[in-house]
Image (cartoon, rainbow, N blue to C red; front, side, top):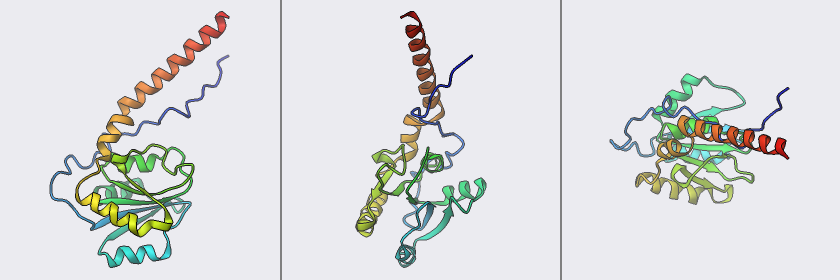
Length: 184
């Protein structure tokens, strides 16, 4: 009888083709006009919504626990200039990977362990609640300079091709170690 093989450390590939909503974001920059606010197990601080409003930033709120439709989420990702993430306990981060695949830079609340398991500096910035305003100003500056390229990062690290190759390599390692173990 077969045995259970752990693949929890192998990144779950994200459909980088399906969520590649922005074929080319090099066109006119949608600066600070629309944000996707993603909340899971954490809520945005009370004053944060007001700060967005006073800054002229429209935002669409998605709450993981309350649920949302995939189509609404995909449409919001297509319209968003960036996303703000309040999340303490992310597992694989598929919803966030989908945003990055759609080339939406993320402004993510920092936690230990990380609230987003797969994330590079090209994907956005992390922040502490204590310094949220200063970090948000810095994030907006970098966004204006187009310093983030999350879709490129996803294609290189989490796309379907990369995920499939990582999974096959892992399974080959498992088979090889079983064979070596059986020989001893």
